[in-house]
Length: 228
View: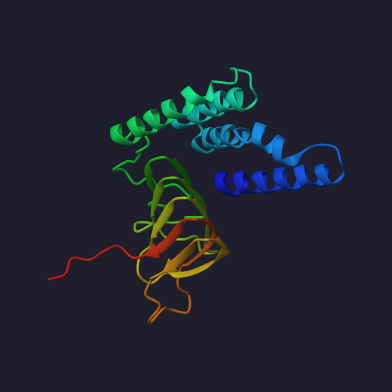
């Protein structure tokens, strides 16, 4: 599961459903969206927890923050609550960034056939040394993810990687000699494949990347070499 893709789809379906209901004269799409938009943050927190397989601090912050915002937009906390909540939110985000609480990573390269990572307001690094790498997903929302596959080998049937960058970036590092094919949807964003395609073998290891980029970027590249 790619959390970013699920979130983006959820937002589109919700918006489309609201305007269909407005067209039928059932609801006012503008006011309903203005009241319920924090639900998207709660959904992102839940998807983050599912992707990580644990209740990470970022998941708690997203769910808790989304619920607080929902209480504000719905009027549950009173009409003056927003005057206190938005400055407090800016302070908390600043502390989160200063303390590096969103940064995750590991010096170990596990031999996993499937990898998943998500970064929200921070950075993450994930990789695999599996000789039969099958699939993975990476999501960056206001953050960055590095996917390191320099020690991996795709399964003989090929490997798949789904990446989502929403106001963030994803770097995918692959060994030389791999055939990388990219497709997807860039919305006010883009991707760049700088891998070397010269002298690729007919049976070169293949990695298929499906990208969703919204005001962000994805780069596929080789590991940097020292030069004199």
